[in-house]
Amino acid sequence: MFDGISTFSFPTTIVFGCGAVQRLPSCLKETGIRKPLLVTDPGLRATPVFTTVTEVLKTGGVAYEIFDSVHSNPIEEDVLKSAELYRSAGCDGVIGLGGGSALDVAKAVVVMARHRGALSDLEAQSGGMERMTGPYDPIIAVPTTAGTGSEVGRASVITSHKLGRKIIIFSPWLMPKRAILDPELTVGLPPFLTAATGMDAFTHCLESLTCPAFHPLCDAIALHGLELIIRYLERATRNGKDIEARGYMQVAASMGAIAFQKDLGATHSLAHPLSTEFGLHHGLANALCLPAVMRFNQEAAASHYARLAALFGVPVRELAEKDAADRAAREVESMIERLGITRGLRNHGVPQESLSPLSKKAFEDSCHRTNIRPCTQSDLLRLYEESW
Image (cartoon, rainbow, N blue to C red; front, side, top):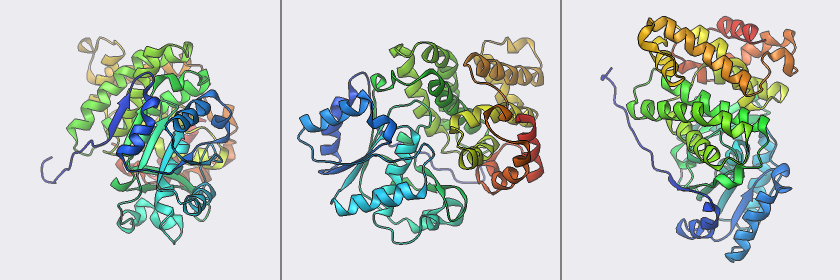
């Protein structure tokens, strides 16, 4: 276990609490940003949240530009167009406002504003991290969902048309200088998106916990993140104005992203092509595939799943470890049902004949390489079939 050298760090400064968004001008000043590019999506621009943020900027005397064309599953053109605006407007930093898509584009903007090659050059699994020679201009993340945790992460996930799949850009230079977590910005999130983004956070925590890399700090964070999600996600889904639940879900989402610096697992490799090919919300795709992956991993991850079962209130001391692990998988399935998520890829526009080509794309995705049980392409196909 101790043969290799591990490096641990959690450097992001987080500003948390109701009304935290009012600190945005001071965060800009602290990080040296004089003219930010505000990156968001068209849906969010039409909400009171966008108005709140822009009023804060205006009151603070901050000059800014807006890019509001981020797709729900961000594509390469989002990054290229926003980087062009960034350069032409003379911006010197970015504010990412929205869900994981807006935050991921915001991170990629500061890189592509300087990089003259293709976005695909920067893919992590192809050595892209070595090509990113920062430091880059600072990033401030203001999440309006509680799921991806991108506000504290060092990765950006973008669909590359050149490669025909999602790619992961990864570098410590992409970590936001400030993350502003204001629960009041999430109260308008509809129940379905609350559930789907929450299951994204849950999957991050669980897959990082079971990832075989050695990182005991991440393990502890993942476990507490799971505890918070089990306690508060259903509350936040039932009542969007439950500020306590909203706040703890924001914390849990950030914890999930901190934890998965260990890495992830097969669920994410299955989910990424579902978003690219069929437009499924990433959190939904995770929720649809996670139970099958848990059954696949059950023997290898039994000790971890037994701890998860205990968080659900299962009397694990009375059970054999393998039985506790089985209960954990069933508890997760029940939670997904209680959240109102309809099981089965077939019920979300994914045709059966697409499963084989999807498995090829899933195998090309790097996340399954750190799954606790090694996966072949045939294994991934079987997992799609079980999830269908």
